[in-house]
Length: 335
Image 1 (cartoon, one colour):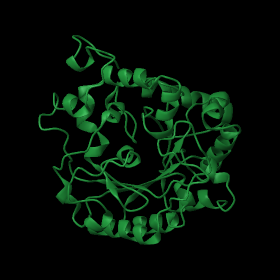
Image 2 (tube, rainbow, N blue to C red):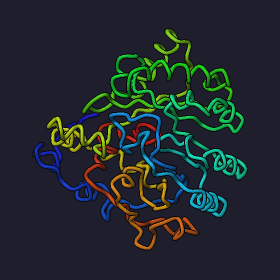
Image 3 (cartoon, one colour):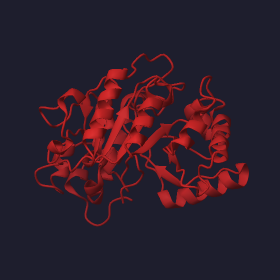
Image 4 (cartoon, rainbow, N blue to C red):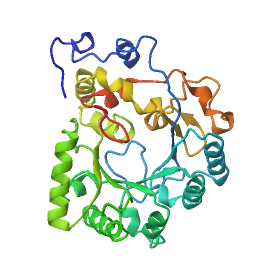
C-alpha cells in the first residue's frame, strides 16, 4: 500500500533519505524496543548450492563460513533453558548443507519446539540429500521454500538456468511426503520481486500461485509469503551498479507504513550468526550491526533471553524495507 492523505514529513523530498530512528520515533517515542523472544532464527552458514541475485546473505558454493558444532550445541542449550522460545528457524545459505542441521532439528523437536527450514528447494536434488524430504517429514519440520515466481523464465533469470525445473521436482517430492496436502506438514512458498519494486498484495498473488502451480504442475502448498527485496549485500550492489539504489531507497521511504511497526520481526526474533554472534535481525547480521543490548554480543553472553525484553533495537536505513507498503517479514506481510 502507498501513502494516503497528507504526505508525511519524511517523504516530502524523495531524494532525501532520513534515518529510520527519526522516522520510527514519530510512531513510537523512545524508539524501537524488543518484546519477548519467541523465535531463534539461526543462520548456520553461508555455504549454498546457489548464488541468487537477490541474496542478502551473499551466499554461494564457495563460501566457507559454517556454524561449528559447539555453537549449534549452545543454541540448543538456549532453547532448552528458555521455554518461551517457541520456534527454531534455520536459515543460511542452504541450511541443509550444515553438518549440524539434522542434529539441531532432532534436539529442537525433542524439546517440543516448532522448527522451520528455509529451503531453496534445489538443495533437495543435491548429492547426499536423497533422504532429506523423508527426514523433514518424519520430524514434522515446517518448510518455507523460496520460489520467486510461478513461471520458469522469471525464476531462472533470478536464480540461474534450470532452477525452476529443479524446484518443481522438489515440490513434487515434498507433496509426495504429505506436505501441502492438509496433513499438518506445512509447506509455504516465498515470493520476492524480480526487481526494484514492492511486492503485490499477498492474498491476490497467493491465489494466482495456487492456480498456476496446481493447474500446470499439480503442486500443492499452504501459504504464499511475500517479502520485499532488502537493500543489503548482493541486491544492494546490483542496484548501485545500475544506478538505482537511491531510487529504490526513496521508494521504500516514501511508502513507510506506520501500521507495520508494531509487528516487526525484530521485536520477537533473535538472530544468531554462524559464528555465534547475536543480532536483532538477519539483515542486521549481514551488515554486521550488533544487538542493541550492549552486554550481548555472542550466544555465550546469553542465558535468560527475557533479559533482552525492552532493549533498543539496532536500526538502519535498510529497515525501511520491512516497513514499506504492507510490510515485510520472514512470515510475510505485516498488515
